[in-house]
Image (cartoon, rainbow, N blue to C red; front, side):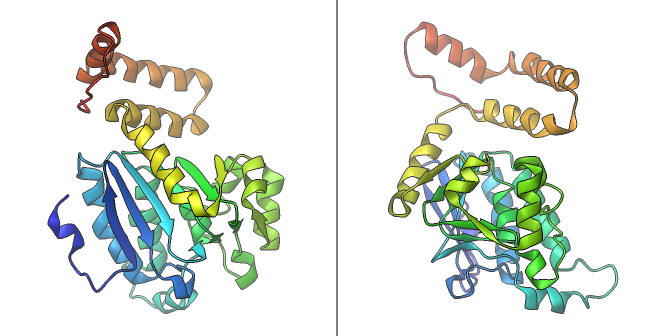
Length: 270
């Protein structure tokens, strides 16, 4: 990866490491339960485009350092940024557009490795992932209502698309948290693992995904993400359009040849 990716070492609010084809971003404000502040947004803005453009990275994992994945946005910084000059992007503008929207539409699979407390903006971050793996000690909730704060990054708009409406309303209205096992039962979490084995299990899963054709993964993600906003027939039509394009790809031809030759395919991502 570009050596410039580690510039500004003093800003270690988000730590980067690459393990094979897997990029790990670790939120690193453990004393503040990894609450999102402007320095963290700065680091996200610097790292995400580089990771997206780096062909050596096939999968992105986001996790937290300490007892929290992310407890939400730093309310003090939100309050301070509310007085930003007219026309200047404030805290929420940058978080929603430059971070969460980028993660939601990231061209590579994104895994949220929920290691602990996950609330408000932390929940909204996890909602942007394609796959969510959680430690058995994790607790997940919304919490905006506890502070009289309205969710501005998908809490009310997206959460009811991911879990049953009455469960989403419970989390939104009460500010309470649910266990990782409960959230898995509602379909938000894919798998619950021992907290001691979280990173190992997520790395193993990420490597399994990274072994697949990058262009297949990207195209499947585009269609799957759009499904909720399309009729079945429109979704099928979009799938067929991309299928016709994909038939001419190197990776599809390589995959078919490898199958017939009884060998492992060597995908190139085009």
